[in-house]
Image (cartoon, rainbow, N blue to C red; front, side, top):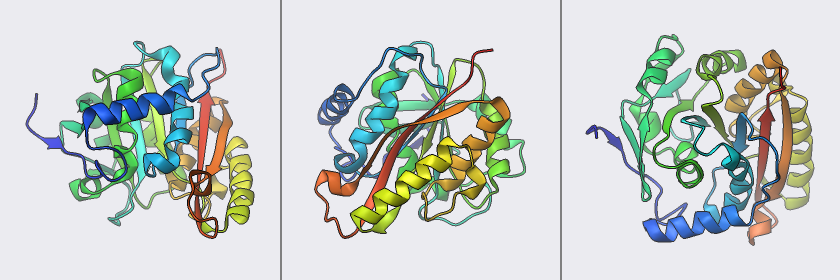
Length: 268
């Protein structure tokens, strides 16, 4: 193993810091998710809050990747920056990303590809405290195993087309999956949040990424970059589930919305 490891920043907060407990938690979430008999999607959109709040919604998306377990060898993970402002997309200099369930190796060739873009730079500070990517990793590990590689990119201030072009360079074939990390609306009352999130889901399904704003989703730019590719490739996006933190017992006067989505490429 290489020596440069990005250790977990939110273990014991957003999810259990104990490997066995975390593995059982993720297993239970995946076990409760629907797994219809259909091809695995090319990409998913999943939330990134504490697992007690959004883990079930995230599992709904990740469960759809199960049919491709063993075939998917790389996962490109994009999430928004919550702590560090910067322009473009931030790569990490780490060779491994670690959770209590083990380490996932960073795909060096994929990283080299995107570092050729002027919009992509190594910004370790953007990854140090960021939970949007970290919260996806236990699901990736449980569904696809610790042998898959990842290309983790934190998205700062960037145009949807800029994010889309970076994603396009990493799109790959059936061995590559894409995971976009985003919650939906923030801090509305429950009824208003559900109404807004339904409208956002319709915008996402309609591939109108340029219409998304921060009030729709904290990860609106990674989502918009995915939808830019969906337009280029005549792909379809489907909503799997919409919930709010009130569904997990949070006060209904100020909630966060969560959604799970899949992107399917049309057969040639």
